[in-house]
Length: 272
Image 1 (cartoon, one colour):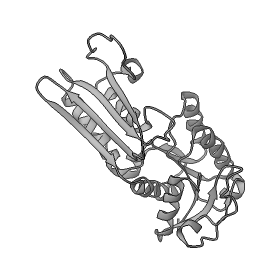
Image 2 (cartoon, one colour; image 1 turned 60 degrees about the vertical axis):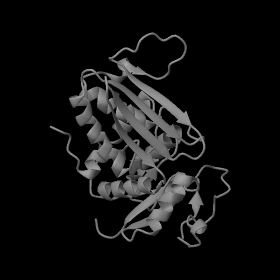
Image 3 (tube, helix red, strand yellow; image 1 turned 180 degrees about the vertical axis):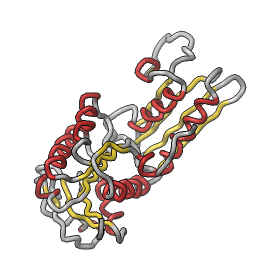
């Protein structure tokens, strides 16, 4: 397509929404075309980039059709129920979508797959380029450390995060389980308390930490006899999430209907 990619932001007055808007303002090939927020938000009617001391000419609105009218792509890092409502309107209007929301139920994921037959949707629990490289490293590690190593996934986020484990931690578990020929639904252990007995070596454990303003830390531990391998990613800012989301928006702008992930965006080929 010619000209800048026109992007609308959902949850535009939240921390991630503002980071996305700031990143767009500093991106010459992306244009802010819409800004959405919940009905009743005190930000409604304000210029979307006013917090930067700059005017974008885009007012924050709760009217989905108004907010999406001039957009090529919606970027959505909100909550499942909101994202599903946004996607329904995107499909009506032919607006593509970059989805960073986590916590979807199986039925909602199936709906997203159906909507992707009408519009391009890029969905990933983590837009960070670094995290998606880590996913590739985990696949290699799991295939190599497939006997004699216990696998534990530890994640930490800020006190306001509402879902646990994080979508990124779950994706890490799915990558590892697939590489080992296991089904994460059957082998995941999400909590331990009391007398649990010896650890089942076929399981993948998850531990969740919530506190303060932790942006996002993830560690996958392969614990063997006499050695421990840890693959860790730590985020100190949301900037790389925003940059990854804009990279995904550029990618979608040249693609037709379909359900894509960050591996598609980054051109990462799975290990042979």
